[in-house]
Image 1: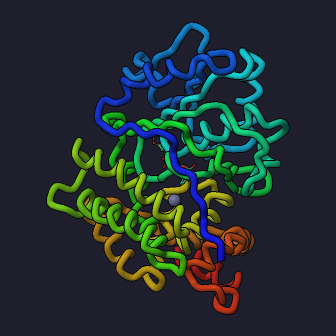
Image 2: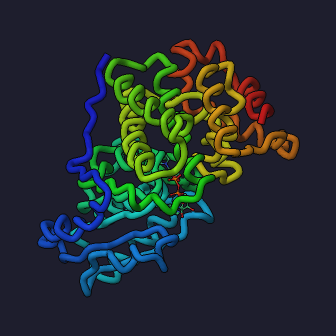
Length: 360
Ligand code: NAD
Ligand code: ZN
């Protein structure tokens, strides 16, 4: 068996207010290519003070992107790449400022600036031919671990699948939890639960190991303090903790794997366009036969923060839609292998996965 040889983020700054260091960090890279920087920023910040604090120079490009209509698509990345190249050529670097969606847009665009054709042809493992441009990730909502993962998840015409390779990893990450203070409570909950679920799924499967467990256990400890502890809730201290929990949850699953909940979540996203973190929550509440203690804790977290998830959704889904979701989920073989075991195909079939969707 060969073991994963995982590349990490090149450089990381952690600390409240560290966003102000972006200027000096970029200054060292402005000799590259045409010397311009491209800022890709969540549209939430368009009329916020942060938009005035971007270290933008005259010929830099700034894009504010609304991530709410849909998760990042291959078409969107191709268009953005074409627009950047036709406006000013190959930039020195690219900076993503936002949530998991913006992290993925930034990673994918940085790669596609130097790789020809459509991003559709690079969805998968190690298909990218050339390193992208220098890229920086600055998360503004914590939980997905997209800041440290080696994948940029895109929805294409055929599949929802990442551009996955070593060059996807950010060269630089700035973890400034002051940027997450404005996150509304529902999004704080759903995106934070992505971390919690990453850790439970990473732990409860055959690929767990001392390395993934060490990160996962520390991340779970932080999640419990943030969502169940005496000081639970949004606060500067908990915002710091959640930013670290997100990173560690991401590192845990990188060296292990996600499981049943993520497989189902991908089905919900692909067929109904549900957002990743919310889709995870919709599925996870019904998975106590796979993750008994994880689901029990999750339900206490829901109650503590007065989050009410809809149930009875499947009544409005057609048989065709449920079958289509089950196929999307089934095809994530690596997740079932981890969660159920190497003989998972003897235990799980499309009909069974359909029955999991019918619980929702
Ligand atoms: P997101 O980026 O879609 O943002 C969620 C919402 O929060 C948006 O409405 C956004 O405008 C808002 N927001 C972000 N920062 C804010 C702030 N500081 N204040 C107020 N509002 C703010 O959400 P997400 O949950 O972080 O990411 C989900 C995406 O991440 C999905 O597309 C999923 O596929 C992807 N993902 C990628 C990986 C990976 O490893 N690459 C892992 C998990 C998820
Ligand atoms: Zn996730």
